[in-house]
Image 1 (tube, rainbow, N blue to C red):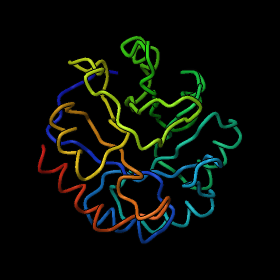
Image 2: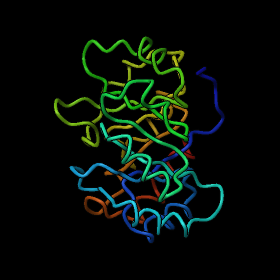
Image 3: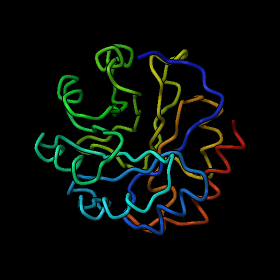
Image 4: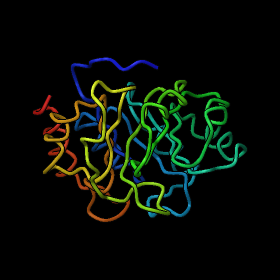
Length: 212
């Protein structure tokens, strides 16, 4: 996995639970939609529900399935039922586990003190990209908190997807400061947990475009 300069920062909106939110995001220009298959999340969705949404999406929008220490059988079931494009792992999964399915994957890393980011990127070199999120003990992601972007080395050791507390108010600064391959947002474009806000989605993507 090699890091490279990109001309446009991609946007992924995660925690999709409704078709109207998915289509709103697509119409606003999103690159990827994320579906959470982690039952402790307030944005969790059942495979059958995700499949129903994905079947109604137009071409050229990537769909991503988020897992946290899930069983291999469950992941295989989600892949088969939804025909998802990409897997995203937020737990303690090994590179071998992440790479054992019939789909490419992303590995999420929480920026906890002492993390050797370059070493972890090398360990997960089979990943399509590395997603960086804020660290809170016992919480695998979706904290809504911003971490110190200066902790990310430049040049990046891998294609970086930036997450953690991003909103319409700070995403342009994030893009200019970090220059990530992509941005991942969930709570920052919501009315309430799992329910997206059309105005926030449109403004968020416009802010990313403005910052490129």
